[in-house]
Length: 123
Image (cartoon, rainbow, N blue to C red; front, side):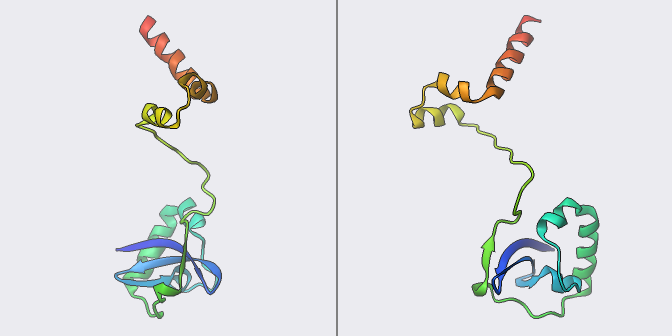
């Protein structure tokens, strides 16, 4: 079992792998001089999962990193898509003291949902 993350190591961004309680550069575990970013890993996950799994099963001979010397970064530097689901949207609007009509005017997806809802009711 392993976990992946991104951190600054010696001032440079690097993909990090945690195996047990020890942290390593992913590149070192894979035997690469310049390892992949997590963006690259997740874009081609099936191939990387297999390669990382093989490397981890063989065992890690590289020295562990000192976590106190790491500055953690977001795992994905530039996500291609963000999906937000607000279950408390109405409560949030009330907290912000924004009139609901104004919030709807800024969110065209609400208009599409309302139109679809009206269409379903008619049928």
